[in-house]
Image (cartoon, rainbow, N blue to C red; front, side, top):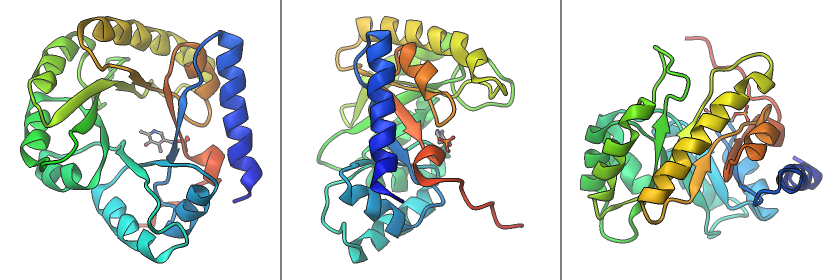
Amino acid sequence: MHAHVLHDILQQLRRAAHDAGRPVPRLLAVSKTQDETAVAELALQGQDAFGENYVQEAAAKRAAMAATAAAGRALEWHLIGHLQSNKAAEAAALFDWVHTVDRPKLATALARHRRAGTPLDVLIQVNIDDEASKHGCRPADVPALAAAIAAEPALRLRGLMVIPTPHADPEQRRPSFRRAKALFDALAAQFAGVDTLSMGMSDDFAIAVAEGSTLVRIGTALFGSRPPKAAP
Ligand SMILES: *Cc1c(COP(=O)(O)O)cnc(C)c1O
């Protein structure tokens, strides 16, 4: 990956934020399916936050990072994929952030397994379009889940994460981003430390930033297309 790709994305983020009169969001580089060499290359260009979807893949990649030129770099690892409660122990040990806390049981499990040291930064994943098949809690359930997280000293409630319904036209996702921002503002008014609204991916980040995203999760636009999944 060429250095100008990261530079271009950062510039697009700054421009989108400037045009909307909003703060520049953080960039989370989504490195799922990319190997440790690709991660190391980006890390050496200054990118410090990486998003992974699967606990096992992230564990292997983190271990493999020791053999790369980026070994020893302080990187932040974010879990952005759905998390089953039986993987909570491993996730709590491996990640700095979990974006996909969507039920009290998972919050409790993560808190129980987070060992001494810094608290785990967590986001509540909200099913912003109320899709039957999707993960994420209902918007109406955010206050109760936020209270459950705030009651755990091992967790730090940082905000919300959303994945709108993937319409072919990203512009169609704007109302979902707007609803997420309203929910986020209400949460931030109620809980100290809430500062992160995770929304926007490769094909819609400019819209998400215009609507108030503070952290965008970008994979394809940084690394190129992901290799297709192996056939089962
Ligand atoms: C894969 C993924 C992304 C990145 O998507 P791109 O379209 O490749 O930028 C962002 N968020 C989540 C939750 C993902 O699973």
